[in-house]
Amino acid sequence: MKVKVFIWWGLLGLFSLTFLQGEPGTGLEVDNYRDIVVLVENLNPAAEALGLTAGGIEDRVELRLRAAGVTPTSEYLTYYLYVNVGVTGNAFTIAVNFSRLVLYFAGDTTYRTVGATWSTSVRGTFVRDSSAAATYILDRLDESVEEFLLEYLRTNQ
Image 1 (cartoon, rainbow, N blue to C red):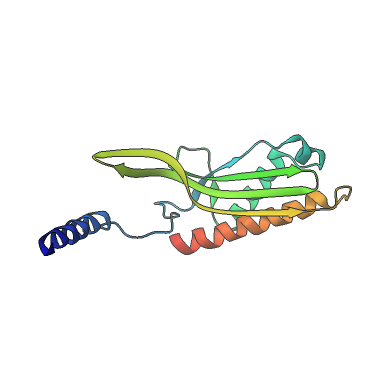
Image 2 (cartoon, rainbow, N blue to C red; image 1 turned 45 degrees about the vertical axis):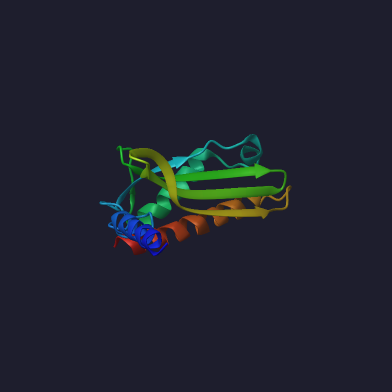
């Protein structure tokens, strides 16, 4: 019995050493943090009815990034900032995700895919007939982008 336990712990330790050779990270580490691709999801009709547009949201996000010294680019990168704003009735959701190429292992095979390695989201409600609804939602978007920038710049500077 002692031999089996010793072998099991030895194999587990060997696996841990192999797996943990890399540094733990936030998922936000990049070679050149000053460039980033921004992808804004198309809006649903309820969001558009409030006067929100995908182009307006993209412009707003890009202005925030530029103010922080990060340049939106259309060049191919292995990471991007994804923004989604949705409205249903008098409720809204905002998702801001940093996604990148991710490698993972199963058995002897290494797989790659794109996955979100950092994310934040906001859910809320607003007064449906208020002219300030769009402004309220955009202010929550600004807060989410600021949260991303804080972590992104803290990680990479």
